[in-house]
Length: 166
Image (cartoon, rainbow, N blue to C red; front, side):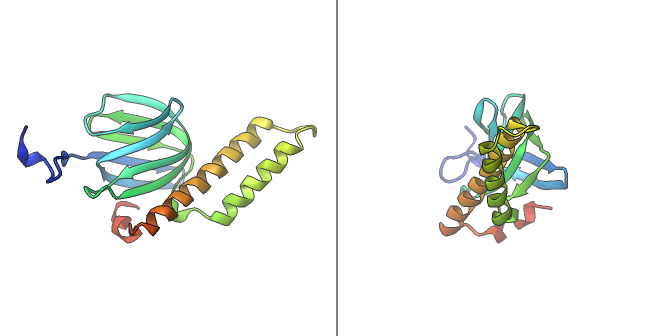
């Protein structure tokens, strides 16, 4: 194996290009060492050189390892599609928000509204699937926010990753 292409820890210093796009525009574009995304099959980890893949995404958290020190950037997505090629990953979602852009109060209010709607499901015109989807999205936003807070307490600085977002 070529030692010029390895990090001191023995890890390959190879990255994959990632684009994460929401309806509002580009949320992230840059290189990552690893991507973990919530697919309909469960969480999938993507490394450089991964086999081509096209899959649906569930609402949840995309975790990007963006440095050799394993610094993570967390992005909430409302679901969508992911295309994987050996040197690039594209994620398309109606909503894609960096963890530091999530409004905790709004997410908590959306969760409460969805839970209340599910409790009163006997009313005419009630759409259980819509309420369930809204609840899943609110819970996923809150989980992404909580994970981000845990990581920031461990010392990862958001400023170190700002150059990757637009």
